[in-house]
Length: 245
Image (cartoon, rainbow, N blue to C red; front, side):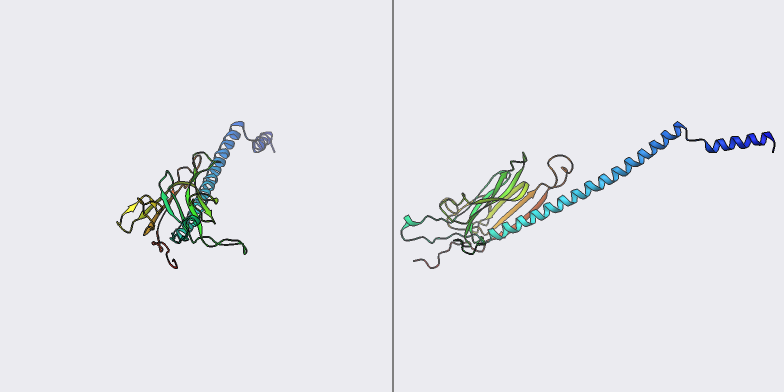
């Protein structure tokens, strides 16, 4: 084999063994980085979408449970005219009182809504129940829908008892009452005042609950609110007066 042939073979071997140049290495790293960013962005977007759907589903479940309880307890509301002969011995007073507020209305009433859990507790199925909005101390600018329950009916139907959060971060809790005498929806109801709706309950109650669908700040704040609307029929519109002497 001649010397020129050996020289050509040596150049070919060196060309095969030669590594990447700096420019080729930088181009490869740039392409790899772009692909990694695209993959990360895709997975991050999928994660945000999944978290958003899970949050909306949780909000719908929370709202449905809240509306089911409100419907059940409002439909069991009652007022009673049963009083002892000596009026001085009448410490209890049943009532149904609904007032307006922003962003949540308030309603307090007596109902056959209490479930006695303790066997020997001195309680019945009668209770004072209330629904109203309460500011969340842990999150500024948010309002929770809370439920008040008192197992003892007393002379103050809008006070006392235990308060629990029923629905978190609400935008609206609106109540309207259908007056059977006028056929009109009214914003307030009061069975304790002569100028109100003395000793009578509404025919129906329209309940509107709007819950914030996303977060107040950050990712997800643009989600649409979750809205629930329900009409509750009131079976006991007249006061209980049976077995009175």
